[in-house]
Length: 103
Image 1 (cartoon, rainbow, N blue to C red):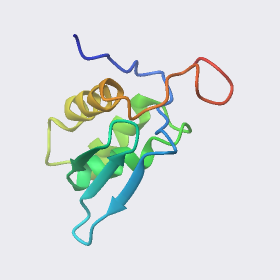
Image 2: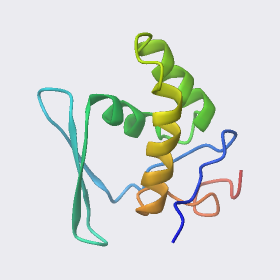
Image 3: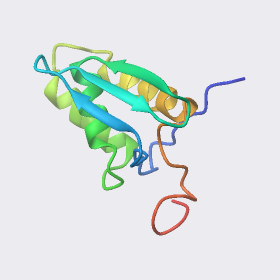
Image 4: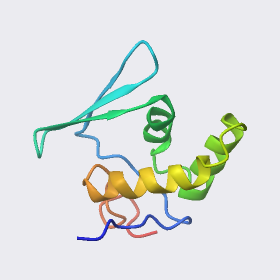
């Protein structure tokens, strides 16, 4: 099954039932109660997860990471890949589930 893409103009929103545990080093552990699965995120991934509040577009999230990690030229592409992975794992609400309907 192909990994879904997250359009740059979409407003990713994390599922509210996914438990978030931020660790002292800035990394993050997510627990998905639907699939009873855990997912680990590095510090940059934890920031992306935090930014998935429905307020920012996927492009704005990627730009924020580019700004925070100027010495990491792949930040934009890696952010897009991470958002697609989160969507593929069902950790993000679909646009139809988010308040206000589809983007």
